[in-house]
Image (cartoon, rainbow, N blue to C red; front, side, top):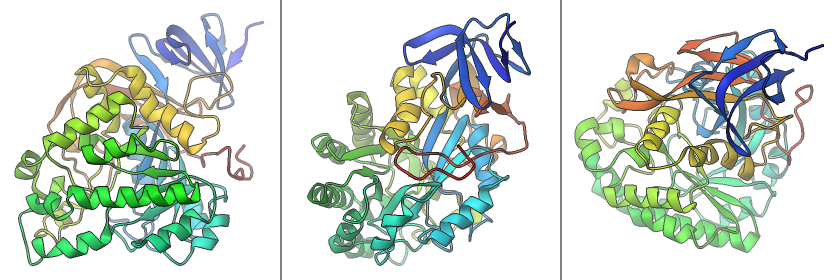
Length: 449
């Protein structure tokens, strides 16, 4: 009697821990139950993958879905719809909402809001406020929490821990990895006169300059080493930081973004204006090249989108009143596949940066590779598909991308979340069934094993 599966992904090139293999994958009860020739097996559903690559589900470890408090830009439903439309199977959402995700009540509220509305699996960062360091020790272990987030420099929202004393208190309280926005707030305040009263948006990387980023990253690593606490340096933008971080790998892991790998100043500001404005800034080509060198050398552990949408009306405000941030969760996979097509990274490196790396450094349980017993999360892609990124393709409520009109090679064809096809050929297939992500070093979510 043949085995029965809930879903078989048939005939694709599957990226297994042993390498690429032309094979089938069988799914049962949300997990991978078989890898091999399943031509004679019985299944409730089949996803034909001939000519396609079946990759481990992409995990975006930095998104801002703006709920609660700014749902006119995005909410958990629209942001997660954008994620699965772009091939992303799980997201980590940031705490700079209103109210801040800085208490157990606020974290539980986000988990309640996500239930039955989020299309992909999800977890939420707890935010450090400067006066909740001791509470973070318990908060970081709550179900659905992916770790602690610290803003050393001001950005969107009210979270800020600018001084070494405050950062040290956070690092000394708890044990899970702390994700950090590393810009030096005192230096930014000293230099604000460069843009105060109005300036061209091209001044953004002059105000928040290389030294602003490097100084904060140096401070952070010194404090992490003093307290033996692992840290994750978010959206690193400078060649200088990458060289420094390459020498401090014991505790510090590294993220960069597709935006910083794809755009360069001054061209991006001349062409896009405030649509290219984000924190830390897009910088000149020396830094773009330095980031790619760090990707090639293995310094970069993760590529996250830093999906941070604002409306076009907000972006049209005169700089520096225009808000920093842009959408990115839906364009992460197409952009990186295009870079792979152009020879800037291998498919194996793509998988490491978007699946294996996130699972490894955040201790994600049961995700990050195609292996027996793991969650049946798959990003199915066509490496040869030539498509154009367009605003009208986006599911994000903000409705725009700085990459509108960009021709790319490589496209997400299907998104499978725990054995259920959430997107196929650009169409969402509901209802949304996202669940909280589980972690090896965190309490399990009741009823979500």
